[in-house]
Length: 380
Length: 229
Ligand SMILES: Nc1ncnc2c1ncn2[C@@H]1O[C@H](COP(=O)(O)OP(=O)(O)OP(=O)(O)O)[C@@H](O)[C@H]1O
Ligand SMILES: [Mg+2]
Image (tube, rainbow over all chains, first blue to last red; front, side, top):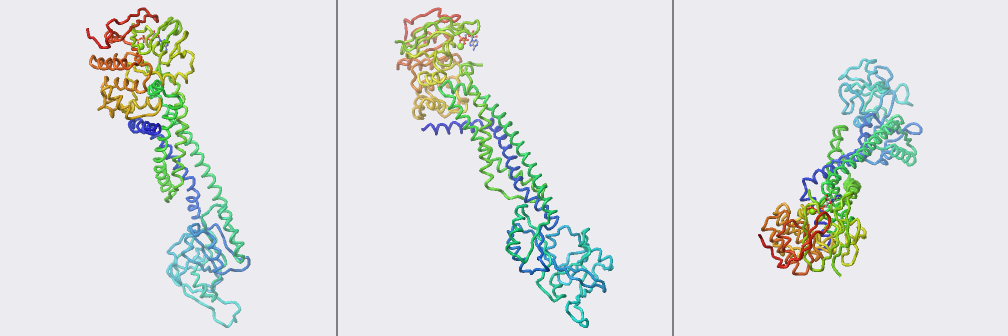
């Protein structure tokens, strides 16, 4: 048998045959590793989680044309630049003045399904329009023109460059919902884009597109620049009030998690060091015996460090699994969404807990090698 | 030249002279018993010979090397290479099996050899207990594992500090019988004991009193066998 085989046999025997003692140390390491890997997972997941939260406050990028309007294909070309996973939603708007009961009203043609994604905060009394010839009416307009849910309204549109004698284009709509946002949206009526195109006879035109992208401040800037350089007919800008506050809140939150992580790391080290001190102290007699039968300080250090680091490895394996469960628990209960496992975090957690356990073991073991074999073997 | 020679050795703790001008020679292959009342300095002397302690004054020549002046590191090496230790409390590593405990001494000495370790256990009559943990062995069996561990590296001297102090007559006889066989093979033995029957089995007996050698007798009827009175 080689020395190495005997070494492995010894330290595994110590861990397996003394398992009730070792369990306490293992538990200390595993709990530390759990909290650490959990916090790191949360640290890296906070931007995504908070990004999703922030996306509830509306679009963070606006597409317009440098002059007038742009085409739907141009919008789609711009959106193709954004990584599909980052794109929460994009809503085109086209504004035209129409008349209801001979009153001029601003009508916006849009895609109702996209609006739900880019403006989740819109409050609808009634229902969202689902089909063509259904209309969503801003609260102010509904009040001024006395329009009720379920009634029919007729929209008149006078095409430009047409002789006075020609008749207006008209289209009848069912009032499906009344919109309240607390903002200027309450002064508009919203109809499906197709209906507006039918009413005006012009299709494919867009005045503004509201885009909601889940990304960091740098990522957003990057997307904006790419869209602006690659598609000159579209002008992209960021909604500063949204992106700036998102960035500050995020960095504060991450700093907080980082701080907690560092504190937990320190506490874990103290806890593991204390446990290892106890483990080593109760084995002073064994260390004395090993020295008496010829062990050098270096070989004792090597054996006990081996045990400690093996324990650290097991603790790390346990901790990386439990840490993911812990992060998942926090994520579900705080952010109400799940997280995906970062595979790289598993080896890192194991490595870190081996290193931390090693450092924590070093001092107690070093002082234990100083035991006087004659004294500890004397009796009692 | 003697294998071991103590020249005017003192061990002083404060006012207490645990060893007080002790001079002693032990020849290679000799079997020596050390007796004396409690506190007379027997263990102190054994620890010094066993390289686990240093005298306050005097020379201790082991194979011509003065171990009184060696560094701690060299003492560890000398102990590992030349000395086999047996204690009153049968000190074994409690999570290693009998054979692993014997192999531990090989591990620190050179390389572990399970076959050789099993042979050593067979010599002490424990071949069938090799895979048992110390807690699964009787006191006598544990002490025999210690004997196997002490002899595995073929040391020049085996030092036994009250090896039979915690054993019944039957186990005492087994251990003494093992010593006799070791003696026959030429191993030098120094055995501290309170028990006159054990002391009588040795070739020579030294009595310590208050750190001094008060009496030295040679066993005229040396057989190596224990004789119960
Ligand atoms: N480390 C120490 N510090 C102070 N005094 C010590 C120390 N070790 C031993 N002594 C003292 O030295 C004297 C001799 O002790 P020693 O252990 O050698 O006795 P002993 O002959 O082995 O006794 P016993 O038969 O009881 O084992 C005792 O009086 C003891 O109190
Ligand atoms: Mg003693």
